[in-house]
Image 1 (cartoon, rainbow, N blue to C red):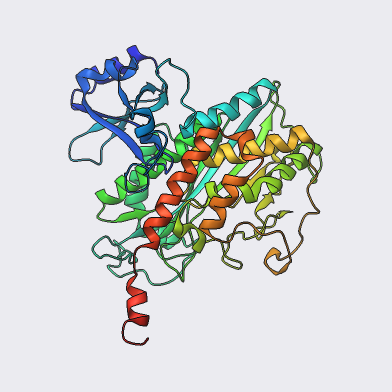
Image 2 (image 1 turned 90 degrees about the vertical axis):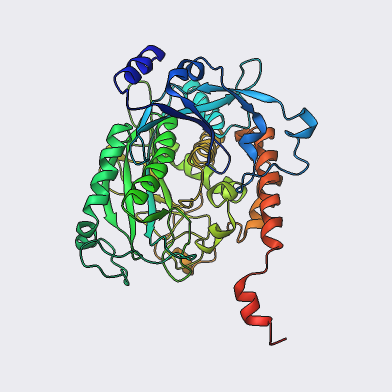
Length: 449
C-alpha cells in the first residue's frame, strides 16, 4: 500500500480517529505511540522517532542496566520507518483504530542492525542474491484461558457452560463450542491480510492451532505470525477470555509451539527441494545439515524465556535433541510426506512465545549456511527419537544464552549488535527471576527446614 492509499483509506474510515504505530522488540512486543489519524503522514514519511534502545529492552519494558545502547550513546533516537504494510484495522478496542507496523533505522537512514525484522530482511536478501525465494508457512498454537484468576484456568464453554477439563485433540465439538470466537478471528485476519487457514483443537483444554497459508515472502510470513498473535489476544478479550502464547502455561499439559514449514523456489518457480523422489534433493539435505549444526547456538531464539524450557522435554511432543527424520514428529526437523512437488522442511523447535522474525531469521540463515557449505546431515531417525542417544540442544535458559553468545556461526546470521542485545536482555531477565522466591518454595521450605 502506498502512502496516498493509506491517506485514502483513512478518509474512507472517519470512525478511525487514532492510530497505533510501533516496532516489534526482541521479545516480539510492540513498542510505539498512539497518534491522531490526522498525523498519519508523519509516520508514513519516517518522521516518527524513538530511542533505538527500545528494540532491546527486557520483557518488563525496563532498560538494560549497563546496556551499550542506553547511556553510552546518550540513549540516541532512531528513525521509525514504515514497513509499507497497513493501516491494519483493529475493531476489538472500545473505539475502532488501526495499526501501522514500523521498523528501525539509524540517523543516516540505514537499517538498525538490532531490529529483529531487519535481521530477517538481511537473510532474505542473501537468498535473493542467489536467485532463491523462501516459501514459508507457520503453525501457531495457543490456549484460551479464564482471565478471572492469577493463574491460568481452562475456559468455560460458551455452549455447555462448563469448564473444559480434558484433552480434546482434533475434537470438532470443541471447535463448534468456540465458533463465534473463531469466526471473529478469521474476519480480523481477513481485514489485516493475514492468510489464516485451518483451525484445530489441540491436545490441551482450550488449546487451538491455526495455520497460516504459505507465502513466497519470509518478511510477510513473519509479519503475519506476529500480527496474528495480537489478533488472537484482542478477539479473546472481546469474547471474555484471555489468550496466551506461553510455551507451557500448564506444567502437566501440552505446550504451545510455533512450527515453521519452508521450501525454496528458484527464478522459474521450481521447488529446489524436489528431486522427484521422497528423499528430496541434495540442497534440501544440505539445508537440514545447516539447521542441525546451528541448532544448539540458535536455541535461545526458539526458546527465549524461562518458561520456554518447560516445553522442550522428551516425550512431550516437543523436540529435545538435534535430529531429523521423514514423517517423524519426534524429531526437531521433520520432512513431511506427500507429493515431491511440495517437498519442504518443517522446523518444530520454536515455542509460540518466540519472536517470529528471529525464528525465521535463525532457521533460514542456518539453512543457507548449510547449503553454501554443502553440509551433510547425520542419518535420518526412524522411530522414536526420544529413546535415542542424540545430540542435545541446550537444556535450560542459561545454557541457551551461553551457546548463543559463544556461537561461532551466529555472527554469520545476526549482527554483533543484535547478538549482544539479546544476551544482555536475557541475562537481565534471568537475574530478575533468580531474585524472586516462589510460592512453591515457601510451601516446601518455610516450616520444614
